[in-house]
Length: 245
Image (cartoon, rainbow, N blue to C red; front, side):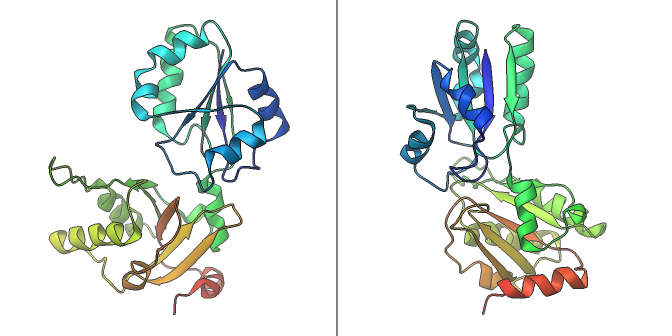
């Protein structure tokens, strides 16, 4: 059987049910490409009392080895946050059903509810999107995330931008500025943004200010960027505590 288990945001977020399931698994994998962990893998191993094997995107996307093993024994795939936030794992569920492999999903807290720590109202968020790291040599410069930002702003919705593991806040904001200039958009160095780092952990940091100031910050990963739409007065008041000087 295959267990796809959400780790939550901190190493202590695993509940008793998840720990009990992990104990009965013969193989424990940790996918380490969806997001960076805010702690070391050996710290997680101490929590669960078991050794963990890290796997990259190719291993999970290929599905062959993972599902072949799950046909014969209990296998755990640990995922940072909630396991079904990443579409890769939806694909895994579909393939498992085709191959008649039993699967159980154990959910956990994710960045999608932790962003309320900013004081921004959850129901005012629009489409969530990701900013991948551009690869100039391969001419890989996707820009669809900016279209999502524009769509959200048109309906007065906040935008959550999830940053690639290898992407810095400075790079993410430079992408937004470049695309906005190319397309005659409204994102500028003075656009107010919220940067979040290590949400849900003791190392959590939240910063609010103009894009040019946020770009100068050096925050721990995992981190994300929020471009708010028009703020409710309560949201505006709450965000003051995170204002960058």
